[in-house]
Amino acid sequence: MHQVLITGVTGFVGSALAASFLARGASVTAVSRNDPDGVRTINAVLTAAHGCGLDVSGAVERHLRVIDIDFAELETALAETGLEQITEVWHVAAEMSYSAHKLGVSFDTNVGNSARLYETAVRCAPNCRRYYYVSTAYVAGMAGGPVREELHSRSHMVNTYQVTKWSTEQSLHLLQQRLGLPVTIFRPTVVVGHRHTGWAHRNGFGFYMFQDAMIAIARAGHPELTVDLLPDTRPDLVPIDQLCADACSLTLRQHSGDDFEVFHGSGGINVRMEEIVRIWGQVAGVNARLGAPTTSLEQKFDRAVGPNRPFARTEWQFERTRLDAAIGLERPVQPLSREELYALCSWYADEASGKSETRATEIAEAS
Image (cartoon, rainbow, N blue to C red; front, top):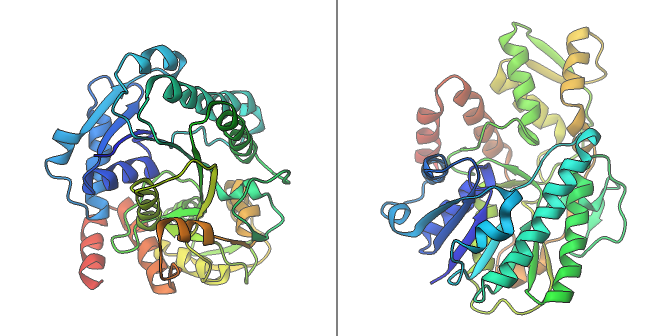
């Protein structure tokens, strides 16, 4: 039986990944902080399971263990919890700040803690087969275009998050060469809600930063908005269910080998930005169009989404041939359609007004 240690289980990807492993019969050890009774972590997993339409009845009680640890004491505290049965580690937790002012904290968290967790697994988890690290596809930098599944020797980056994720990949590559525990770098693209239910965390990060800002514009009573993006750019959007299916298939492989692996957890490109902006506006109740911001309100919106605007104005083609080969995927992943994307955004907007339960049921029944 696979016994997977996961960090970041109270977050979007971590909670969905934990629920997915439990639904597939694996045991999960969730490493959390500031959760001494485990209730916050358990509730996050149950919420994710419900949002993803997964049956974890009984599995949470029997196969989910929550360990409350201060990462400042990682090496000693985690070692004392008993890791002998752990077969894989998924390190999902991260400092997600873009701010240059938080470079030191982000470096300590993303690079330092990732290395410390790897070294602890080598020392204390003798049955661990592989260390999976959730990075980001945007360590590729801002050039756009085709991106291969490999380490990047250099990239032009624009924020702290990219820099520290790139640095962590390099650090883990060096550690694997020295200590031997196989490493998989798993790079999601832009993670969005569940393809069929729409479920997502309302964390205002990434794709949903734009939608949250438009919802705020609509609530303030403004009927129109001009957005400074490019019409033909197509973002690579990966639904959370696709991401978890890829991650679980990798982990549950019969033979994972001894190699250092780099994979893109991508969903493909399809819907143009002009159409996405129209969708964001429709579900928020705003007539949104592309153009240069002119009013003070539009300039305020532009500042609010500024950290993610460069990513929304650039198109990448992320290769995932190595991932598909590793998990034996016979048919290419199908990108989200315009209708599916509209449903995801509708769920997110409805959730803010308490309608998500009804909307998720409608979407699930329609599918």
